Length: 370
Image (cartoon, rainbow, N blue to C red; front, side, top):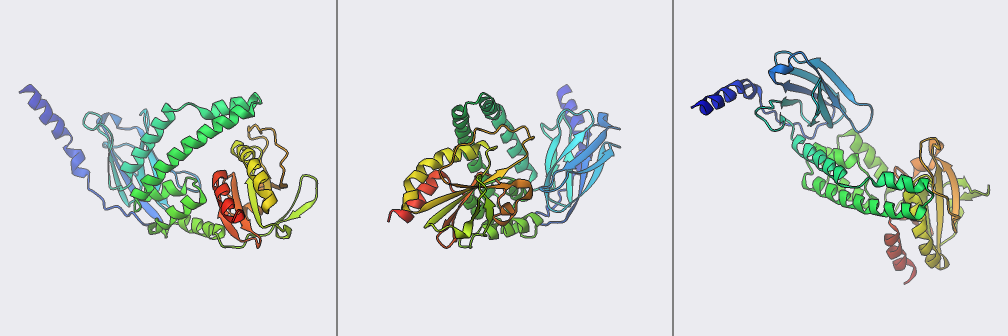
């Protein structure tokens, strides 16, 4: 009898919470979103400071703060497009993560009744929180390859650093495949667009995913990425450039006369770029006699950023120098990550983009060994 009365009392005390929880219909596909976030909290949180922090793809976090009164708090957040957010409570150890994708979102916290916060009105929040939990598990279960690679570079052991980077690259591919699968399985959820737009994928993966996410065409980030993909589109003529070589001579792309030209975008301060050069040397030795030329556009970056450059190799192909802070090449070729590359035919038409060395090898075999 005592147990029954305790259960009745517990559920009676929660009546206020269920009464105020109205399921909002998510405005999933809208941009320029103003969202009202209602929080409902335990009685002993009365008077505590509370804050919602939204994290849009571009720009600074958007913050709204208030004080918990009568076990509740209301926040208003205005966004250019749906974005992830978290709820901070004074004295609470864990932030509450959710996704702002509708005009009204309700968040209920009652530790004695719910194993985790109850969120309604947001179509994306459950998937978003699951993805964050997955990333946390991955982070905790894997060795810190970044620190190990940094230590190898400090010790001057490029070979060990390359092997560690190869392992890290394999793990990134596993993570990318998992993320791509998640996006493809939920193409109408705003958090899928955010996961896509805030991560880097290969050119072919990006193009394929972008085509499946047209539901978000009103988003500013969609229009921006669409314009960038137009510049990257295969079949376009490559923009021309004239840049100095390390010896001081000027190399102009349009004046290079080879059957195929690989434009390699890289920096000696980025280990994957140096690993790419190491792998490209064999490919260059095989295909240069058959008509391939490589031009590395080497970007200089902030040397005070705490990044240790590997010892730059003497490259057997052409190299030109550019600066990230003043580069027109990065804008013209829509470069947003390195290493990146662009395969051109004799007329400087783009026929391949962001290809791994094995992919380049396969492509060049088809083109040059007919």
